[in-house]
Length: 432
Image (cartoon, rainbow, N blue to C red; front, side, top):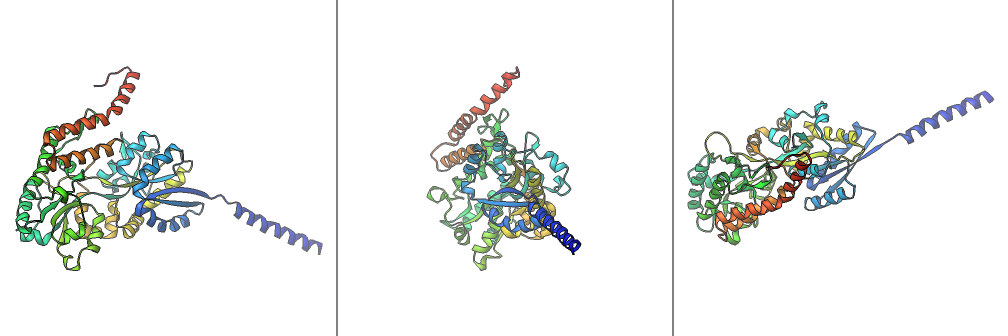
């Protein structure tokens, strides 16, 4: 009897020890900050990740895009950044300068699931600063031409324009077709992207002297700026009080304008908001180029996944990046949010390649250019928009607008030049 009691006692101790081990099992919690709509829908992808990685739990915090930049800088200053971040591509250089991000070259090279040759090269390039990779593209966007195919056909064009000369001719004919009070194209006057795209297509670098000074009075940027302003001068785009976007979808449906440059976020919006009778009356096309020979360049955009340098859970957070980079997860994100996948294999898997309206983006994503990868770019872009509007409204002559733009940009970049002088002085060299 005593022996049976001892056996029972031993069995209870063994069970208790096993249960105790289960309670004490280590679980790593990683913090992931995601922005906007992505921060909402990505949470639906977490259960499968946690099922595959039972020792890791993910806490997702959704941050509105409008508050994200300030919140991220505040968190950096307070040493409170999460392990993993979603960052807009143009923000990456700023956080690299702050030494907030961990380099990812070695992790990507050693990964069996994150294949660099599966990404669109122009998008991957936006994640590199001084030759070092700091982000993995999560989703992509760029701008293409959205247009009313029915109105273009009435103007005598069965196909969208492919060159600047054809584009201008199409807009002139559209102007005659749509009539008074309507326009060929909408170019929002508080935007900087159209004129920068035109300049990049011509080969303008936008900045000079190693991105230390503005180069907006250069012949190439001047040529693009002149072409842009000529569209307003001819009355092909709304100016004055109409130069700002009202109800974009209503105005497009009403034929208030027949073309605009916009991104993949509007594929779903146009499908939902335009009247059913216009479903076959609109289409997309890659951007026209200055001359024959392929689509014109567009901007490389989107968002990427980055690891923060201060995180002590980088290995676990990298597993989440690998998971979210899988083609199947990229397709899932697309279906939840409408975001375009960053990997070619995900495009094929989702069937987007054969979608007639998404196809323009597939083609355009192989013809991309990046804006200067410097932390000051957001401020510079706002000055481009300001002086473009002043010139389009006739408040400044084009030459005066570009001269003022160069002066403002040189002032914005003064600290950059000062830092370079100090660095070179320490090395015994002289800045050019």
